[in-house]
Image 1 (spheres, rainbow, N blue to C red):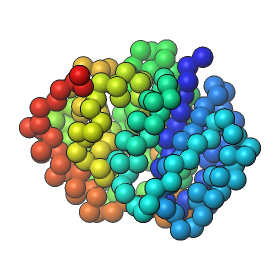
Image 2 (cartoon, helix red, strand yellow):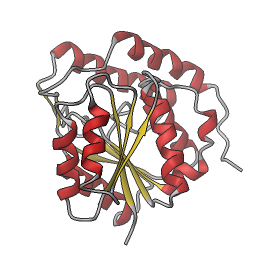
Image 3 (cartoon, helix red, strand yellow):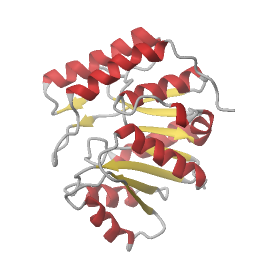
Image 4 (cartoon, one colour):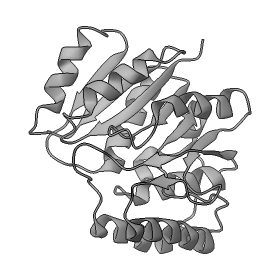
Length: 241
């Protein structure tokens, strides 16, 4: 059986973390989870440690000092998962904006349909977002159009953070040379995988705005992503040797 693991970065997610973990562990397929907590002062990590007693073989925790960024959390997680032989590595938010049931569909896109990177897409069939302010929908949707125009990337949801990587994609990318560590990280990883000739497949999902806790999105990290796209356009992409 394929070894599958879901990376969930957290910062102040005490309202969501237990429920999201129990949901993932209830799925068919023996999914493991790696929580990467950036020093949450609300006790998120303590909740995870308590649950590790119940799921000792499937629930893993890395604690970091302070908020070090979404991209660095995933890069740390990727290396940890590759070292431990996982075949499929997922990214997912802790707040139920991503439906854990869709993990099965992302996995099938890779394991059954032959994709190397499966993307849970909000925009491959119009706009599938619930309870977001209109301004945020417009910003996100047109940011993806901008990225496609600049980079020529044939992905409609370029900033999507709900994805499944086959291990060969992460092994091919030199993770130490990934430059963008905010939300631009999502763009850079998809673009690099595409340039390395891996097969990307979008899987339509419905994205639901968080009901509990506080969003970590800000205009600053969004701007960083868009400016980084220009630099990414002119960077030479090489396969890791």
